[in-house]
Length: 68
Image (tube, rainbow, N blue to C red; front, top):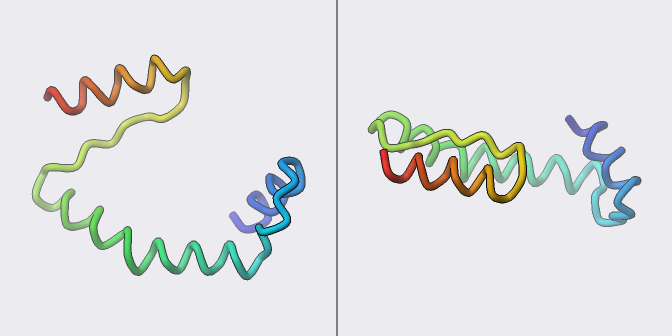
């Protein structure tokens, strides 16, 4: 994952994406975000939405997830 993000940083010209920065972001995710995902999933109130596609396609999926 780190290698993939570093390659993306090169392509996009992001000098702030260093291995240390990427590892820190991953650590913050594991410590702060993942527990929330687990909390909401355990209560059956988390919807996974495929974010690949046009803005319109993804927006439609989000709307459908909210409506269900």
